[in-house]
Length: 116
Image 1 (cartoon, one colour):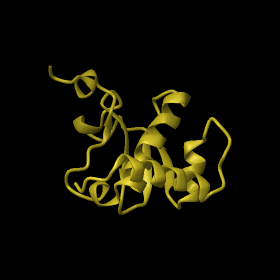
Image 2 (image 1 turned 30 degrees about the horizontal axis):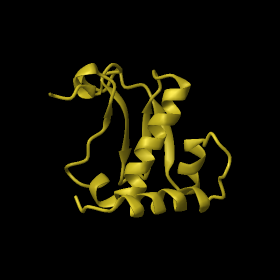
Image 3 (image 1 turned 45 degrees about the vertical axis):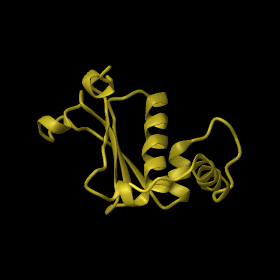
Image 4 (image 1 turned 60 degrees about the vertical axis):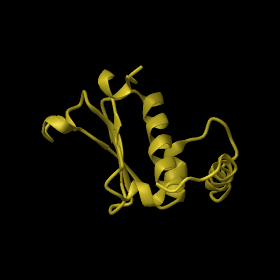
């Protein structure tokens, strides 16, 4: 993944909000996604196999579909947060989010634990 500076990240994030004219806090991440022609779908992952169980997958961005898929089992506040995370991946790191190294957002404790 190509390294970008903190300044570049902040500038891209600012443009992501000013392009659709959003300046009210808290930001509705789904509205921002739609302003960037990225669809948001709320999905039941329970029938998608072990890697997509409701307990494991929180959300992911699909570059080919230009869509963010969010586990509908998560709470409303968490949904907005997950959309923002996946939108950030899509807008700030488009090459990475379309590549093989892309990582989806997980719900399970193991994925959120860092090794010491």
